[in-house]
Image (cartoon, rainbow, N blue to C red):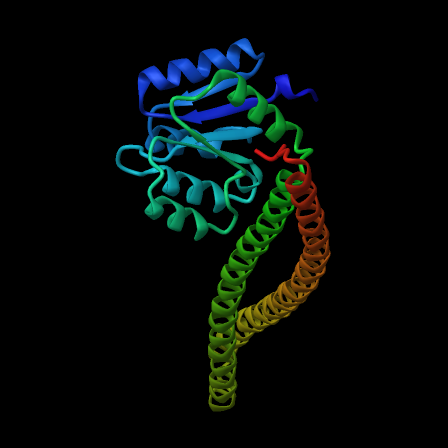
Length: 274
């Protein structure tokens, strides 16, 4: 897929700025979906296919740009989308908040934007070829794996709790059935010589015996399900640790390549990083 086939989401409340950025990107062959607020984006985000790039203004009404990025980073798919931050504010408070994010934005751009610089940066982010963007991509992969694993663990824990509740209830039913069976046997002994009573007792005993068999089978199935979920939890932990180690190794190598690229840029006086 070529870069101009990707969709870009733009979260910008300033209508004039949004029109300018949209026009620049459309003329550059990009497809853009504009949202005037964080709320507008959040409303459709669960139903929307993942975009290739998010351009987010920091100074949004209500939920600001930091909150938008945080929300994206909480989603196992959208957290992999590179982010360009737009801002007319360069105060240290924004930088402090951005540094606290699990993955930093790939690019920053002051408003009003310069068309050539905007398109050049967008192309670089979409291609993902620069060392810094590649590093961020790996960090995003790691975060996505962590979010997916955490969500799977939470769902698994919910199912384990449900199974535990069902086990307790079934054990209680089985205990009551066995108590009832013991009571019927006592009644059977007491009612010897009374055919009508014995027949009724035998009928109740058959029904209780069927209930005991059913509940014993239910217990076996629930215990097997519990064991499967526990083994799945252990397997997921092993997979998660293996994936994390692999990504950590790639991140270390990517950071080394980025450091080398920065040293080369410092020597030559060039900088191709966004």
